[in-house]
Length: 291
Image (cartoon, rainbow, N blue to C red; front, side):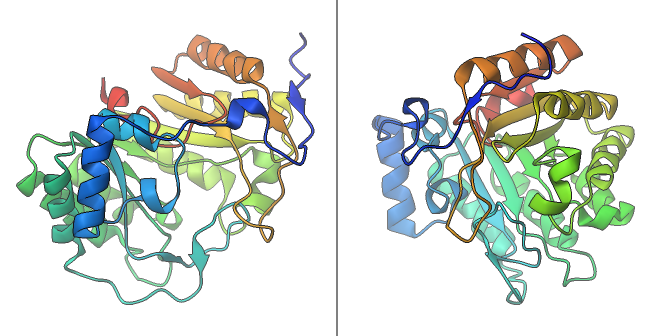
């Protein structure tokens, strides 16, 4: 197959069979589900209805979101509310750390909304959250899935200084579609953030893209090349699913063989880990990415 042929199907009324998931089960999942409900804990896994929640929780991994649930950006793919965020809750670092302790999480992924309304863009809260988790859960490993902080190095430095095992920043899509999909974000700025993280000594960097927004195969492959040129270690590739009718429509459902092809290309380029599949999300198998 030539490198400019994309294996996909037009989006039908229903999802293709490879996007259907079984309900999460298992002892570990049931225990964590009970703790989340009992203590009213907040995870992206539950609020985002992640299809991999059962698998990740079964392996002791969960994702938490800080800095509220209202974003200052209005990306066309994202289901998070957009508007004027509430004031920063400075008790949040302890709350997140306590949640991780209660759930006995082995590997935690921390993410956040964009907070362009704050001078430090939320980077101080990010650092304080990592410190609190370290104090309360010294055996827990961490991945921080950060925004671009508008490329301001001092804000990025705060993440570098607290030394999470993995620092991730998602490209989300290919260069041509960035303005439509991410609006306020910039393709090259995201690459610069990832490159800067590595240059400052971050051991493991990571990024993710989603497919089905109208990208061509050659564009996906170019994005993989761009990420490797920025010395990114881990990449995740998944299928975009439209959160609501107000969001960008799905233009293609990428078939499993195409995801497998991207995985092979990524590994050949030298990525340490490539997670590529319709149900893959940013934190999928995250606990393995520290190795």
